[in-house]
Length: 220
Image (cartoon, rainbow, N blue to C red):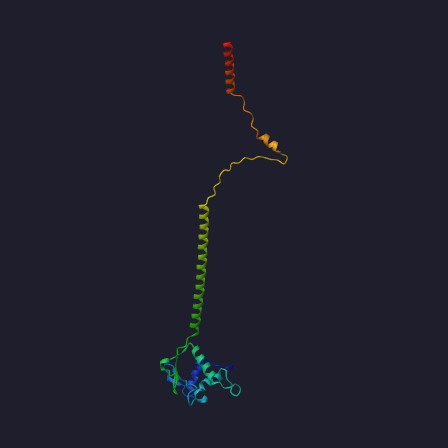
């Protein structure tokens, strides 16, 4: 690539002012409007040095083509030139004035006011700040949603704990200690019920027996 390469816009202006390329001219210099010959290669009478002169010179200027070294490729020259024009932010096509078909096909372009570097830098800074603030906002929203879900989970846990209280019912049981040396007789002896002591019933029976014997003696 040549060291003295110019940007496309000033290079184009210099080519237009030179009047050395057939069909490349100012349509309205005050409005920076110019036309470029755009004849299709399949058209009858198409010539490289006449109809592709501008594309060839741009290929030479950008180092894409070297006469006597690189094989001529007019189709690639035109495609590269078109892509370079479409990528420029300060040049736009005036489509209602362009002619796309026929032997007199041309494309009309307008050079827009140049944008200063300071404005470009300020726009890029503003865009970076907007992106940064947007990313911070998204992070805060994500954190807020996580906190909300955690609080809801905690509340659900507390509600489930309160709704199912643990109630302990007293368990009544009897413990019987059975050692390794215990036998069935020992267990039986512990559970023997002592005999019922004599009560008033026995006294009443004794009195009845005594009266009966007295009555028999009286009869005799």
